[in-house]
Image (cartoon, rainbow, N blue to C red; front, side):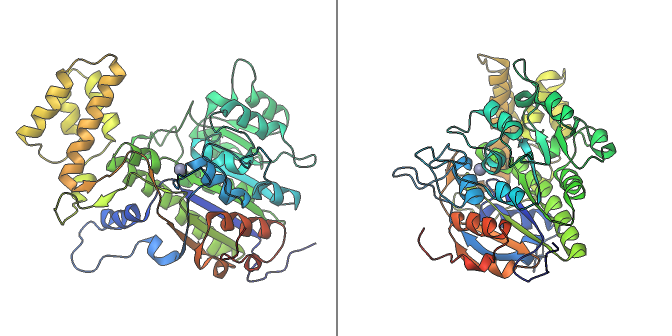
Length: 437
Ligand SMILES: [Zn+2]
């Protein structure tokens, strides 16, 4: 049965989640890419495709602020849940996900992430567990929990080898025996043509985009393009892509990491848009699961934000700190990676952290990282109000047939209901975003 091209039911959906990318970070990213901003800025890709906003809050007692597990569950299953829970409600009832509905309706499915593919956001689309920390159980379910006779997921690309290839169980071997390509490097990704693949490119999360060796670790864009190539077929596909570590940068108040991770996500978004433009029957949606860090452009009564100090740093402060501790010449590691002149006060601050005793080498590295983040935040006038998530709504971006159904404001659980309606072959506009659950 061939699907008719109807404006509200595209054949394929690529659903992209920028973890932790609140509205302020998107505005900041536009300034960051406008190298010679003077007068009107060049709009960035997000400005072109903005269609609406969604809520993020979870059902977690009096708290209104979600974590990635509850938000992912809402977007994947159409029901809000409590923080920490994956693919279930608060009573432990299993909630069917868009991946499972799509699979049951003959579509191919995939998950791509720069965190572990068993991490909270992808897990919300592919697993059902009481705790997001049950990484082994999540990985097991990707293999064991079938839809009919089929594996739930055709494509899994990201980090997390540690959760799949273990002393007690080798899911790499099991997937390989079941006909999947199981790959671990950038070149293997390029060589593999199997429509079903498990690609695990690091033990845990991938290195931050700016620290990655592109010869070894694929970018989010490369993983997204590879996933699309494998999934594209007559019956259509659902692909979830997560830019996982924007959130991790923001938790650390590391604006260098956050901007570089947004750049990595943006390149993947552009690649998805290119495919959708050529294909004509693919809807691309991009959004965030929540904001992180309470980031502000401007801080402490200073009304300017100076991204040139962020652009001048060529590795994350965490990686620079690591290099400083491994090198015989800590000053060289600094000047190699920070292309503005540090003041004597800043150098003293760095040197005193470098000299200070710490309980472990890792603690010492973290202390140095924090000092470097502080200096870059101060130079660029980047403010942070919390080390945790924040509760405001996030933007929704869309391109392709059916994007009208995503205009305006919605609950994040309505996002999931719309995705599931689409996967079941129903009209996405049949879900009223203002109707109570
Ligand atoms: Zn998150």
